[in-house]
Image (cartoon, rainbow, N blue to C red):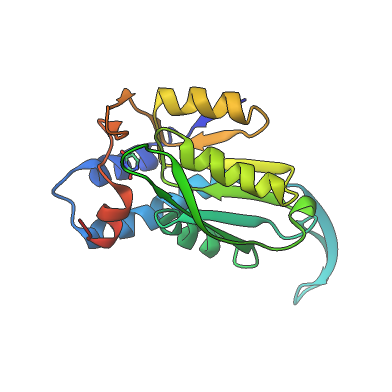
Length: 208
Ligand code: URA
């Protein structure tokens, strides 16, 4: 499995502000949207192009255009939606899947409560988004589910990953490349990424 750490200075700068506990809910949300544009640029860097004939106001040209079926962003609810919004700004025609999972706070296992996706997942690139690859339980469960519905070409995009999460994810889904802005030091006993940024959903929505 490949892991790409997006170490662009703008990504790292924005991430630092997001980690800061003094950053407001509104600021956190805005930064998550901005950073998702930069991460989205990397995760889509090698999308295949074809060409089509268009008329500019001056002449006809054979111009590049994305090839193949529209890609799918699969958001792992609820925090995935923070990344999803920016990604849809980049690729407005993308299809969207939602995978509703919550973390059982006792067992840290992912429990599914919602799933909705395009029916032809097997024909599409599926980019699964969830800001935190912590225990990897949710990411593994989301991808298990998407594969069971036919997806074969997947990528996983997050903001922060733990070394433990990456190791578990690589064992479960060695065929799925991971893109992240940082691999943090460790996971604590409660399943939080350290130093991390806290609970991404709570930071995004002002809950707690
Ligand atoms: N989910 C979060 O939102 N934060 C963590 O640190 C781990 C999982």
